[in-house]
Image 1 (tube, helix red, strand yellow):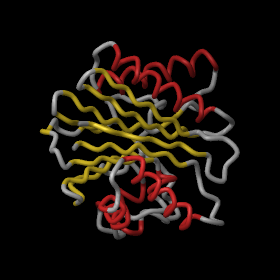
Image 2 (cartoon, helix red, strand yellow):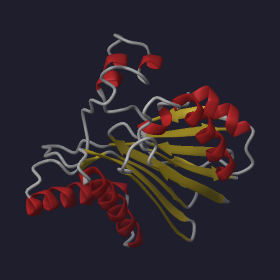
Image 3 (cartoon, one colour):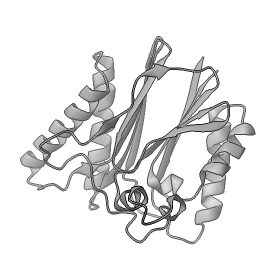
Image 4 (cartoon, one colour):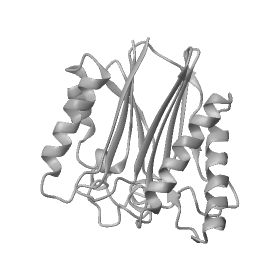
Length: 237
């Protein structure tokens, strides 16, 4: 059985530029989370556009690649119509479950975590300068969260590309002890993976897990100008 819950909050900002959507039909599910960029309300427009687009693709029977491509093409078209010139930009994280198979994809620094039997099994790699520095051996993984260049993204939707910039996982079998977390950087910045696991072990539902993690993130981020934060928790039991 698949159960899930989601949150999206403004944090200490005036406008929430994050957006989430959950779509379900029979034994098929699509979870989408986007973190808009650019300010001036355009990030909010971009993130809402792509999560709505992904829901439309799901209802039409499409897959993750179609979600990314339709979102990218739609953003570029909106920019052309509005004269925004690359200002409608956003990250996107997607998780698809269908007939006990699961796959995920992302662009930007919104993350997807997979936990199996309460152990971290996989995490998407951010398309960001700090993640690049980790991969080149210049900084350690734990330095990403508060690195001075953490907000410098290398790949997003809404910027012209010659080749698709999103990353897709292989499709794998869904395990009955799987738990997934999709979250924007405003969420994972303030809670480390060890805490995610500890609170997962203490949770009987996705709602409880999200509530416990949110409380921890708020405690850690108190007085530190928290960004918008969003998360989707999914349990397979």
